[in-house]
Image 1 (tube, rainbow, N blue to C red):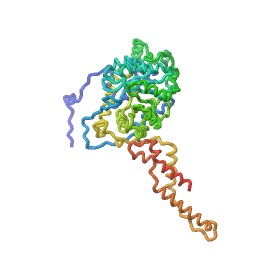
Image 2: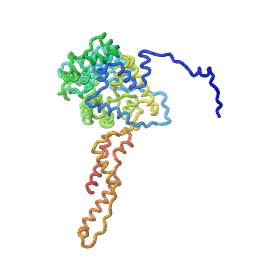
Image 3: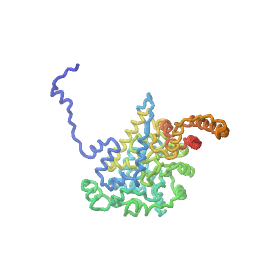
Image 4: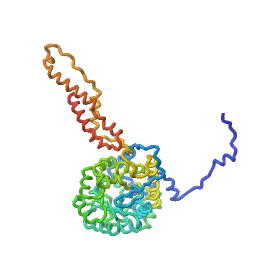
Length: 498
């Protein structure tokens, strides 16, 4: 039995250790343990219109919700008794090194989120040893990004504009500045319907109204930075006035085609990847055209809502073109485990957009550094827990994609198969002599044989797509639907006989 005693003051004070309070940006960022923590800080410190432009997506925002859910709906399969004390997160991507299996994706209007903008992102990426991608709609020039990241890897994202000569000029400038990879973006012929921006009256430059003024009052630091730094405008385009939809509509060309890709391919001296691929046939065609890689992306859910989830599409594309080209992935990444899962299923590299911008809004350059530190720690910890020491050791067997969304045809077929399997096979009763059934004996025998065949078919039918997806490592919903075609056909024939 435990002997109790009255606590002595000396003993109590040993447990009471007062920490010195910390204030300022460094303390604020230190408390952020996840990308979602950075998002919360960013929301408090950034006006609604700028935050919602970053955080929002198109229409009902289903695509971005599904993309994030897809990463949460995975199951890891760790190996035990495999020491992974020292983990190597480095990789080779598109002819050069990267210290981590992710880089910064192209983001437009970046100085709107925080005045340091692309310069902070490029400098932080250079310090971390990862690539930085500058958008055509960037608010820092090609040359200034190179100055911010003189020794690191800089990539350029190209929109094909109505005025082709403007696009060609940007290609030449990026090449002259030493950018080594071009992202030819194909998913933005017109602007998506980003309703948060419409409701906020979001425009470039920001327009003052009673609502924006009231929203600015608790965030004076943002407006101080905005009003005391160079004018917010596109660094590569001359048109800067209007809503996002207006600007994209004025600049982008909906007639973009494979001929434009061929033209840019001839002009660009470095590596070229196509960003915005959303199906297997397009991936195959692009690789046949000789591009160096593709980025599976639905533009962060900001263009076509209900578009395919890139992470679900990944295993199928890797199976078709993974040996011949570099397959990369973006959209929905909010945790280092998301990146590890992508690499395990065949992605050579990933890109982060919102995750980086949340850090930028939360604390400028220091916030971007914090983003990288969080993702790095999550990647390292996940790899150690899986028992792998390098990215090359990650394999599809380490990850199972669990299914929430199943194609309707597959679900209907499974229901029919289950109903048929549960129905007992009746043995025909003997017919009385002279009845119509007795006279149709041959037909009855034939039907009985068919019924027995159907029963046999049901007994040996494949497992349902849902069960097969749960049991098969790296199986995506579409892949499960394709593999279940034989079972669907057998079920349909059986139902027809009944």
